[in-house]
Image (cartoon, rainbow over all chains, first blue to last red; front, side, top):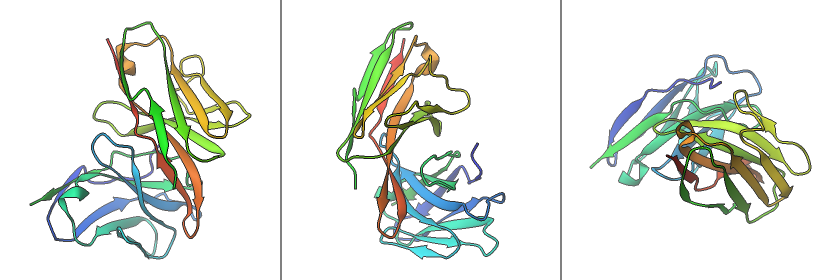
Length: 109
Length: 117
């Protein structure tokens, strides 16, 4: 079963930062937090992952709270192409994923 | 990275029949996974397929309904047997690849959209 909860939907103005929250209060010490997104009619795409420290790559930043019970994915300058469903996944193995409901992000022109 | 193809991309089938979905990856991978995405829903893991061993099914999925083959390190098939309209979904395969600095990254295929009438 999914171990994460996310808001169902969010809107973000184009060019603004999109901050997508995720709660994972039952996360265990060795489990990673992964973020994937699914653009309509495509397979999910990897964005970023982390264990304890904040992480940044060319796509996004991941902020994990000190107690690791929640995290936030940040898209620094959202574009229309970032409109998608974003999934926060907690996984020990990094492969067998139990997806939650995700957040449907709509970037508004 | 990995390039994954699935065949067919979509199909419309009659209830009671079976459909075999193929998943081909352009590099050798140890683990392949099959997911189902029902209309308007999130993805659900069906099973894990390792080459040379029986697939491992998640709760609620059984081999008789979703037999899986994994004949080599680049290919797998999922069969949806004795289909009913409730099987109408997108079926996706995925693979795990190690990636420098990332630990593992999972790549998903484009999916097979199945409609059962």
